Length: 151
Image (cartoon, rainbow, N blue to C red):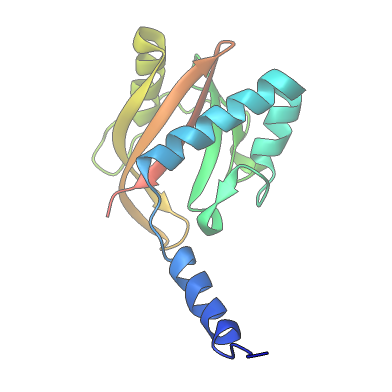
């Protein structure tokens, strides 16, 4: 029987290359849809707890990709960066360029029910404000969303 001694040495290389992959728009949309499906199956409160649980099922890529939930007035209901953001009305929040991105998010939710919008936001991996685009979708009068940093 011949042993393949390369296999154990390739595993770290494969894992590192997978970890370095960039988040795709399709993954963002899928994550939002997964969060909505979870809410439909387990209830709003369970979804809110799970989304706010840092490192939980709705966190990917070391925290760079996470779900957020807003009400239709711009108040944070759940946020993947932690409970400190929950309960705060962000409707007037501005990015570094003065874009009221939460107001835009709410407007998109009210007019189209889902879609993408652009703004700048603090990237937890780089600790820098970077261009970001987020996908949102409305379910049961809540705005579920997730975003991707533009490279």
